[in-house]
Length: 152
Image (cartoon, rainbow, N blue to C red):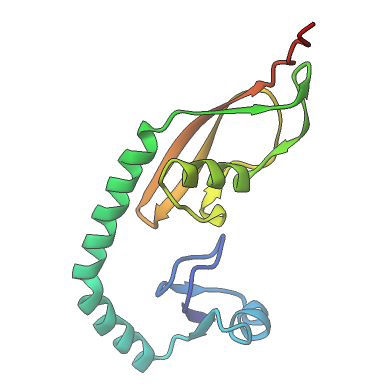
């Protein structure tokens, strides 16, 4: 079953992609949820025309995303967290990375950051998807919080 995606669907494709899926997945999930429409010949023609008109705007979006990527690469992230040895009390997630990026002037939604849940100190990398063509590797380090010495 061929469908045209109306929005990005993780592990399937991006908006305006023509994808082939099993009929049950398309009929019972993608179409009722509003994620896709049937790829009829007329719908494909309309899509092709829309993509031609959008090509110039797309170039500007890609160049903006590349500029943002360069700004993100310049940020050095060091997260301090409470830890017992190397194991953290809690975890560091995509939301924590999104907050740190926002504090550094780069507002990026946490759903575009892929790092997983980190529960140990050390150096890690997360991938940030700014555009379907622009994905940035973001290195970050998690260090244990130093205990504050009591002043006598």
